[in-house]
Image (tube, rainbow over all chains, first blue to last red; front, side, top):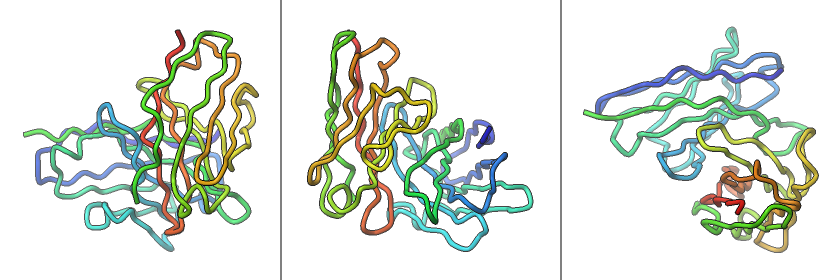
Length: 121
Length: 110
């Protein structure tokens, strides 16, 4: 079945960067966008941005435009989220989620398991 | 883009029906039929339960239904079961081509 498998938990110091991976399988990688959503402890879901997997475009929420970078690697069907200048407020679970395009409508039909990033000195 | 507005919590007894509202604006919910709903159990990833306002993915119980009127979307769960106890989030496509979530609603089955 469709799988989005994310990399493991990270602990980082303030000011550092973190790069999380989302490896996809069992579907045509280039037929779906990959979005990133974060969830701070005890809080709701927050949309961060999206990447076209063939690397042909990224689009970020205004809040995250200078904060995150999305990249993809078609050879391994993996998408990456890099978050820079980490602060304690960036402590959260980060999810990747798949969304079809073309003849499909915008909704997230598959999600990764989540990656906890803890920022602490 | 401000988050969509959902009630913080709702509750109901087994067998009853509940409705969760999700209010946005003409730039998101009111402008498109691209509202989706997600169920999230503690410590788990969200799961899609409704897309395009009213559609259920294969495998999702028909006890879940969605609707929309103007700038407000709604999720109704009928025949409440203990397993329905979870957090529920609405999400909409926006005029800026972004996505926006609601703040989430905690459903308690009494």
